[in-house]
Image 1 (cartoon, one colour):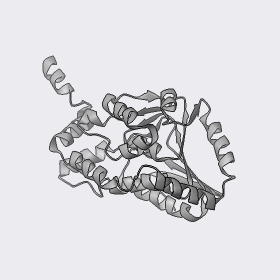
Image 2: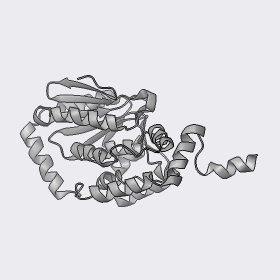
Image 3: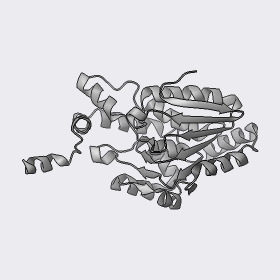
Length: 261
């Protein structure tokens, strides 16, 4: 299968799934979500480990603002909305395989969603994690159920409000990252070698059990998706996104531009 937004490689019981949209800063599109789901379909029966990665500079930078701005200018509705994206993260969190997020460079907004949905998060020392949504009048509605499950309410709350990146070291101290080092490829290899010893049946049963006793992610889908739709249909938010894409200006810089004239 030839994909346009990802790369997928299978090695025995391991799937290496790489987000590959360098021209769009590895942002999330409907096509990327669909292609990731197509790969996971092939993983359900035969794969025991899924290693998710991005580029060395950017793991995933969240929503594709250029696509959102383009749709807004044309008066188009967002295609499938956030539901399929939430379902993809749900598959990573509960699917019958061990999911490893290998994070190098920037993980922002929806990129943190991919991270928080993974079973194990391994990072390079260059990794940075941020939730920038509130800068644009948005908030990470779909990310938060997964993130709170992983790092707790207050740390997720703080990360959302501050909007600034945290380092791999701080992310590890908070529990968002499980391990990090300067040679993260070797770190991933060591984890994969250990995890290969687990049987598919044991992994399936264990993750099914954990999904029953942990935060009810499926039950939180409806309010998360509804909140996301409300934010991305707000004309003021769409204007802020379009202005950022076209002029590189944040919403609060309006007054700065006027003052400098």
